[in-house]
Length: 378
Image (tube, rainbow, N blue to C red; front, side, top):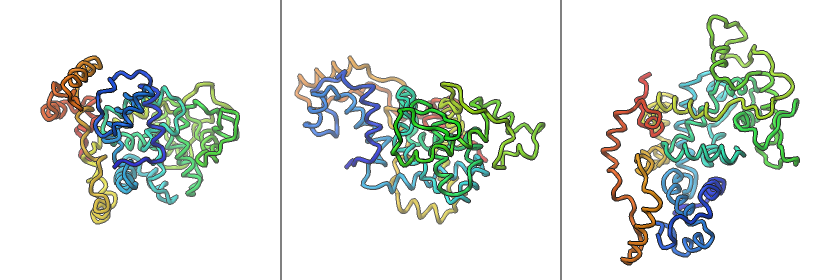
């Protein structure tokens, strides 16, 4: 059975926003796994297509989130997020551990595909497009990218090293990537732009990020940032990326309107680079190196059936999709024949031969996103 979790509505709203009202699939085209009365209700509201798509995604990408508890999800995050950060950025990893952080600060990012934190609907739709055609673990890779991005890592390292401050700083990093619904107020940092006080506990200390932004004083140009932070020829004592301060000049009292410090496209590109270096099949060996075999074995014994580690669904791997008008035509023919369910995938190429093709194109960003990248051996 699939069970609702807090945040599922954030995901559903995006599908409704994109697909609702059109009713592109006939009402007699039965959706597998959805009770007939619920299908009729969705069809009557013009939501039959988003309902069908949501069921499909719920049975694949979101499956671990919709179980009776979060055991599989929490185990997957524990086995992946900190080991990746430890490999990619040891100073950040050590800083987080010294503050007593657990990897579950990214839980909301993962289970809502960032739709709970990001208020820009157009941007969220772009993220959903990316998630749908990628490996189910991409939200975790994207969460890692959010933390180790050169701008964000400086903000985290500049924070006071206690659990509450670091946790709030991490949770507020998404505001560096989308200013929609927020404004930057000198001294207070990011505050809500709706003219009302925020009652969300996650946003109680928005000033933490704002203060550390001013201290870090870096803009969103990733190439310039890397040059300033890591250029050995001009590095001084205060420029060491292992320290918690930056010698880059401050950014002033305010941010230009529409200014984005860490564009999500940079984060997507960084996440794909991380996935190229450490594809999903190499995550468990990485966890063993980070935690030790006995601990990893105990975690897997607690959650032996983590769906997030499985290969992408066949429909996400296919190079073509059946057109809506073809699905309609087949649905009508099936209805005339008295069939309850109509399969629309019979003429699509078999997945295994396609998988072999993917394995021969491991340098392609699309193949890397699906989890079939080469990986490094370090």
